Image 1 (cartoon, rainbow, N blue to C red):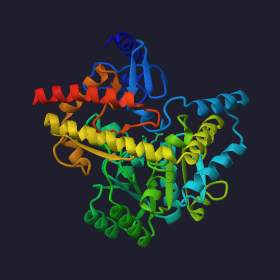
Image 2 (image 1 turned 120 degrees about the vertical axis):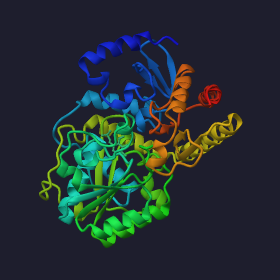
Image 3 (image 1 turned 180 degrees about the horizontal axis):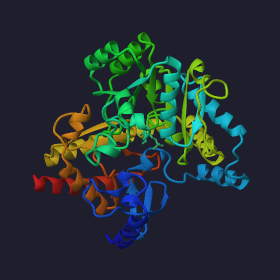
Length: 432
Ligand SMILES: Cc1ncc(COP(=O)(O)O)c(C=O)c1O
């Protein structure tokens, strides 16, 4: 496969953009590639690079593309919205429509604010929790990623782990001290921290972590978090930036039947355009300015194009419940075939999945937390990535990420995936 143009663009990119990319995982560094491929366009389940190569996309822009790229009905509303103007800095009726639509799907959300990214949503939710509880610290889980605001960048999953860091430089000691971390799923440690530490404003969790690879959560763990935070007057935040509208219409809240105090959203609610949102109990949300004194704002918050794409995407998902069923069925089939191939080639690998998200971990035993994920093989993952790419399949360029399936991936796409996977496993077997 000829990727010379990508190589040339990368050389040029490095001169003006740090590392040549605007988000670190895109550099393909952790899968030992000299340069990433540069995408020129996308359609349905496919990506096309600058050299004209076609790939089956298993990244889905890290989550938003549940209907595939440029789903015709979404594209149509985006085009017509753009003709009306692309940003007003004043409120629009459609923001109310999106707010009501999201509220219908998430009973935990009584009021909601839109942002431009998931990072802003989690940052605002943390600030709001501090104001509501009048406490300072936050508790997050090792390997869970909640965007790149200072207080949430401690032991923060994929983007950092890919480059073998757990924390970012440039964050003050005071901020780091106020962020307490615990291993995901460790009932005892978490209980002790919450009982000993009186100053915890919020516990923030990816209810199904997908930034240390996908981790399969137990309902008991989330119920435990709900109980213990309720007792301690600590705000429970479900960060559903990935899981919201991805694993079901009502995200993990619906799947597990748990109501957190605040929920953060992003990705799918913008239908592939820049967006984020945070919402929850009225008494907490009404602390936000101009009702209360917690500041939150944004020039592009509630951007009309993103909002229109979000309304259309959510409406399609809502009106066609078979989409989630189909995605779940296809992912189950896919995972079962991958597991058969793991056995056939005797590869030390295991798969975690939830609805349309999955991660292949190159390790023998089940992966349950960050420590397990770190111990998986970088070398085998690099062979996997490389072979899939050579065969026209783009999988995540980091062992700490999830594959995202879309509704428009076809039987032919899956057949090509298995064909490439057999080749990858054969190479891995020969490398053992
Ligand atoms: C769970 C989770 N929360 C928050 C974010 C941050 O969202 P954004 O990249 O839109 O800032 C991400 C991004 O991948 C995420 O996966």
